[in-house]
Length: 151
Image 1: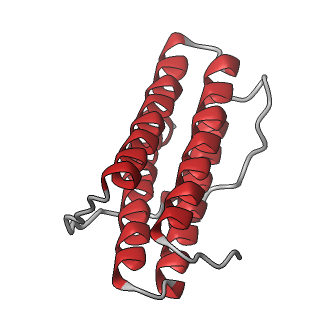
Image 2: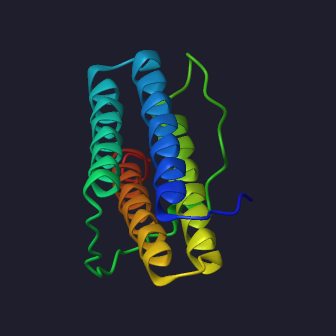
């Protein structure tokens, strides 16, 4: 894992990760079979763009504030089989893949916060972990509503 020498290094890393998430959700949206599925992934791509914009603002203005917030974890992502992205992917498979991706991003940012050498760096990573946790929860709720309850 890379060593970061400044907040700007962290922010550049995080903005790159957010762009990768934008690309990921746009790809899932393009492969979606239904309008509802397309809308869900398009919305997440837009949220990731918002995160990247927020990070850029933090970098440019040097402003950062973390609001502590408890995020529920339904732990559904811990108990579902991972799927690989394909054009034929079902809604259930796409949700599982998205949950796993958000969980991995959460773990990455949490690990980076543990390795941070100063409080500012730690807080940036904790904030990013918190955002990824919120995303995973939204996918878990969607999964609960549209997959588990239908079966």
